[in-house]
Image (cartoon, rainbow, N blue to C red):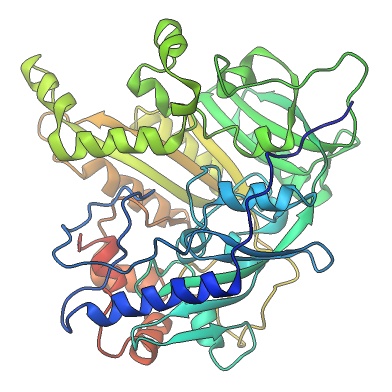
Length: 477
């Protein structure tokens, strides 16, 4: 059975067009008055942190959204910094290739996934997106564009750019590693009744890259309840069996529900990569999109994470749902939208605590280990990626939860998030910085490479044109 890996590949961006886009970027940087904050002129975002209102024009990145080159022989792609993974995947699948890690949402940009963090079901073998970067052209605070590589003169910036969230500069272009794909991905949904058995299975799969004699190429999972959790094991498939038909979760079907409804499944590679985007994992239920009548009326082209994110933006700005809750006498709610990395041996403990103390379900699980061998040389005694230090060889589990909880009498907004931060710290974990954070400046710097970060800040942004990382992540600037 033949398979179409992707729609037609997008046209590549030529050198002249890229040069004009870079010139527009630099002109917009020069036009921002000294002393005024430099930010992207970008309407869409995958961040949940409050952002300050823009008072001056931002950086013009509107033309930095394409793919410059795909090299099937070298298995690399060179892309502009604001190219979305949807655009990049369409370009690389046309050559039977994909980025080593494709974050779950179509509109995440490659530059965003590197300066922030990204993760997916290939992360147990390929690590984080920034670990597959070969080189980057970065706009830094001096107004220069630096080409940075793992072992070049700006290796310090290469190592501190990940998790800096635009506070050290912005990606103009990146060259990243690719890997071959098969036309389909076969899935096995394995149920576990307790977290100890689940984490032991993760340990074995990461070590052996297999389960019950069959290879495992992708690994993630969902916790539905304390006694109902699933690991989904994905395996490349070069052909389909007689009569086998790939499932389609881009319309009426809902992917996460299928985990409990069927033991096995098969998806095209493209549908597998975007299986979580259609319903924003399960968060589309907040907009009624999972109700059968609403789902039939809701156009398939609007079943996308960026559409739901715009709806969240309406709520953040105008608060219609919060106003209705007040009129109905319901308590206000605290946003609890976080991804945290917990060492594997402490993950069961974290899940037990979370389900007892935080009334949110489902929960996403995604095992991760830094790429081996390490793709860059690391000074002795230092973390490979100092702004998000993870121990080489150690297995972590990304735990994702995205919802709201009622603010109980006597409690304040932020209390639940602070409790989560404390528990994550107690178990030796980290949390991503795309959403609310409450650390003191001293605690933040201790956890997120403060010394290495400040050294890069002094060197590459001496006039402080970009906001400080702490101020962006915690200080709400």
